Length: 65
Image (tube, rainbow, N blue to C red; front, top):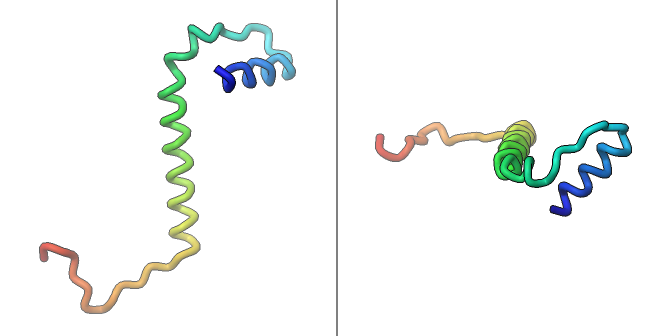
């Protein structure tokens, strides 16, 4: 609820005309949070891959081979 209130204040400050009531948007919240978390996770993975080189031993064999 606090996040919603912050967003309403931000939208009003930007001149938004209509702000949907909390009951209308609360069902979307878990999906939006999951999508945001996925995006952040992918960004972190890309950053790690760019900064940390991965080197495998010449005789490395994945398990099961």
